Length: 296
Length: 296
Image (tube, rainbow over all chains, first blue to last red; front, side, top):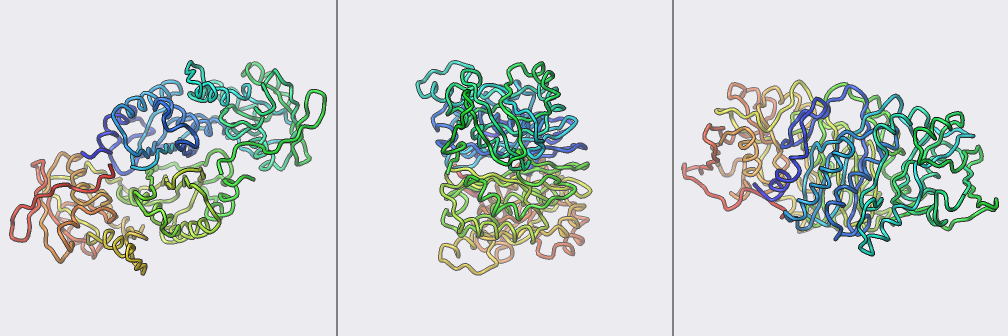
């Protein structure tokens, strides 16, 4: 058995489970998915020293990488069921893998998912996660926003940034949205999806991700900033790593949304005119140099 | 539009195609797969300076990374239909992406596949490919080998190593199994799969990959080396990067296999006893220090 097989067998295989949907045990060239319904798939790479510090506790490296990828499935109004892990690591050790596998275990327990396959290759630390999800009644796309739609976020902004600041000071108490992103539960996304016209997860900054909804929907938006409610500082509008859900909805659903998701905030409205206006509490226009995070 | 979106839009989107099976255009958080039948999935990372030289022409980086991942689908007796690409690159340029996208284009034309989604992140060069495949009548697993089965390889060994040696001397004429791995065609694998009991692709060295079949099948093997037929030197038995198919079959199919795959070689037999014996042409036992490639 070579090192790759040793680590996969010892630390990943325990978190796979054979099921009707994922019927093949780990150990072949491919995994099998048996799904008569449509499957959602999303793949995301987390790179050391770009998306997370290379010396981060590997428990969080795992949990965070899987959460970030799963967040894209939830952003389609669906829920994650299983995932493949491609781990690239310069020099894996038992200690690193022990904690990494606990991150897998906890994510699986928190969101009802399973690992369905994976591989390990040598190289700069890079965790690539491919998640498979199941839709409820409808799939929510970026392109579905209608003029007049209310714009919501599922929680306050800036928690990712705050979590990272705390981590840098070695304050590691939880909850920490950077170390261990909390996503919407299966129950919540199921209840929410009938009301949504469009959605995206806020990973690169609210304004950048909103601009993606607007672009795909050929619409614009007006945002009203009410500081001390959903942001701490204006920079929270362009900070990444929040992994809250940004979605739009016909205003007739506002009461249902408040009940389903009490942590949500109504932050603006979709417009016909294809640009994004941000208004402060005095009604003045706020301009931004950049809309969000760009790794390049 | 940030750099990630610019490159994805310009160089990857042209090689995606909306179909009944992959019905969602690139540009949302997830892709959709609509498949009433079982899907095979395999994910493989190719890392710069581990699996390929970082300065390799990006045409070959793309073609090779996709081929290596698709080879795992073919090794299940199935064929690749579509794939996701996770590209991690330290500093992408138009020039790099132009050639990379031509590699995608040519692979798609050669094997009838489509790109169904992808992302681009900053970091050390790493191409992670997740391939989706479709089975024919049966799925061929590593665990299916029976005592008495003939052991075949689909082509001679050592072409990957030879291709790499040529590349190092800057001899770039094709065919070159290292730069542009040639896989079995859809037609061939379809014709072959009814005869196979077990299969794996030779990526890490024949002996290592054969040991994986033996382990999963709880069997052993006797190999007969006939130099100047399917190997050039004894080292070809433990060289990686060949991407030929290693498979076992009941001997009653030998005539059918010869007709279906004239390039194949019968190299040995599966045994009840759980070890692998390699016999040279004088019938003497050959021992190996290592069975194949291990990146760690």
